Every structure is written in structure tokens, then in C-alpha cells.
Length: 81
Image 1 (cartoon, rainbow, N blue to C red):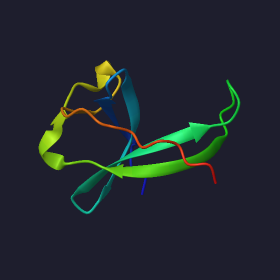
Image 2: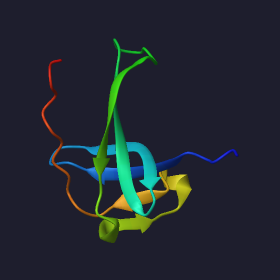
Image 3: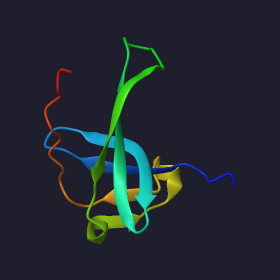
Image 4: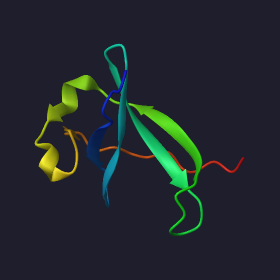
């Protein structure tokens, strides 16, 4: 089955970020990816960040995402593994 990729836009204290949106049942997750050197499409690692569904709002996909997360997000510090 071909399922179109959903996107969510959320804000941090300094940026607007658009990420892939996944659902595990009714639980939404933003998938945050870290890419290789500048311009490289290679994903080095990705992490899922759970979102509160009460703050998800459906928006016009012409705006670059399918959903807007209406709560400010604090991203975790990168881990050196």
C-alpha cells in the first residue's frame, strides 16, 4: 500500500522546522533526521520525538506541511555515539 508521506512544521525558540510525521496508532511522532556533509542526502541517524496530538492542527499542504504543531518544542542536545 502506498501511503503519502505526511509532514509537520513546529517551532523551537529560534527556528521553524519541517519534519516527517508518523503515527503509531493515534500517537504522533516527528522524525528528526541528521544528514551527512552539507548537500549530502545521506541520513546519518534519525530519532522520533513524540508530539501531543492536542497541539496538532491540519493546514493547507501548499504551506509546505500537512500539520502545524502549535506548541514550542525544545530539541534534545545531540548525542555523540
